Length: 365
Image (cartoon, rainbow, N blue to C red; front, side, top):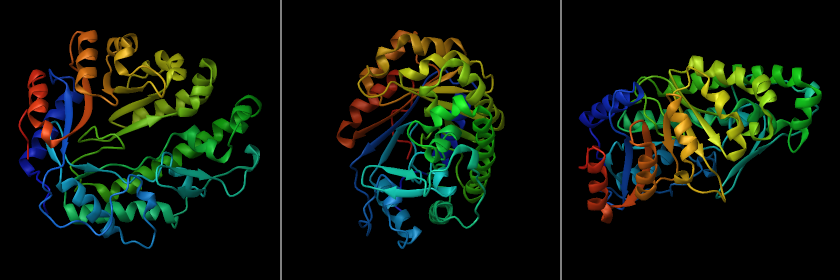
């Protein structure tokens, strides 16, 4: 194995991330990856696709892991960075676990029902033989067996309950359902919630206890259960419907997880931010301004509100300049986390940036 990351490095990661979650780390977390190093091993037979769903089901899981291993072997990690992967079968893959058809393309994966049923005729059941659930577990299992805890394997993107439901009630159908059949929407939301946790726990049993910790499609390391919760559908809901249809299920998941985060996607969700911040168990917010909007440095009032509520903050698509700006706007960088990736030729510049924030400037490998 050519990946340069040892047990001592993992111990430092767990310690620093643990202190950050507890509010005891008096600096930000900066997960920095340098790409383009000598991998120190032969190329893999397969390319490393962004969407794991692009690999034909006939391809052994072990070959997928080898493709990931080749990519990781050419990386070096600075600051709070560590080697990590996750099986990307598209956002809301639980819809496929529940019977929707999965269609994979080069730059996306989407789901559609075999038949669009009225919401009053919809029901969902656990299928232990579902091909996509099995594929996710097979790939996770192959990674655990190959890396033996040297690489963090994140949870797949299961999705949000209403987002999953919207796969089966597409276009404007679910919007109308929330008005005409709110009780059916609630019932199905809770049915999906139960299945969601069954999927999470089943995949987690493959990953633990060998995995270094917990991550999701966002690699915020946690020694105890963590996930990036979401409800992109609530962009189309007013505050009253959010309180009635979304918040109870979201709060229930926050109570189950030790370190829950929320994916706040787009300006249309800002109307719900105050309500979301009222969930005591929620640890942090990932604010995504969205396409056509100012980057994270253009929303100081949003980040101030999140920090004033005592929550942690993930910056998305962060670069050094943007991180500096947000830290200056907030008065400090404490409680922030950002993920950055640069070519290895920029190592000195990256090290100077990390030193400014008290993060380890030399490779932890």
